[in-house]
Image (cartoon, rainbow, N blue to C red; front, side):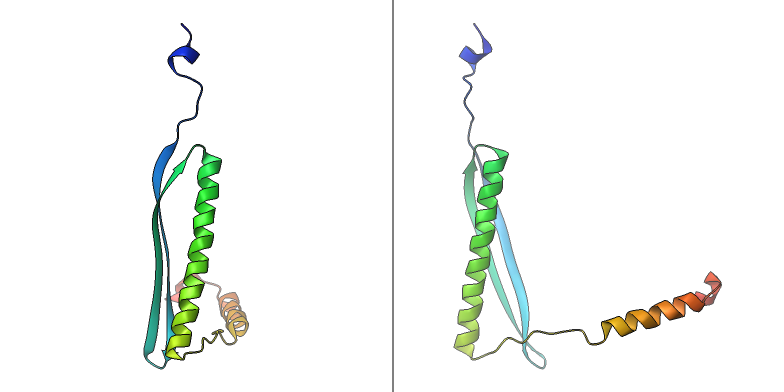
Length: 111
């Protein structure tokens, strides 16, 4: 009796859970924040690592789409507009930090 007769050469499916989420805090006005949270908790079944990876990527895409739809609906319903924030003069701060460190000759000067 061969091993193929005892254990047929079929791939067994496995089950697992996908638990992923997005949480974003949006400042709506000074000292007021809106927190939007979107989670997915689903059971998936896969037969190979590639199959699992593809299903996981599909759930990632679904989560992102679900979050965007929820965010747009909430912002529209509450009458808020999202503004993108930028750090001002971050390059200038890096240049100033490099100059300060370059002038130091001894580590004891840092104390």
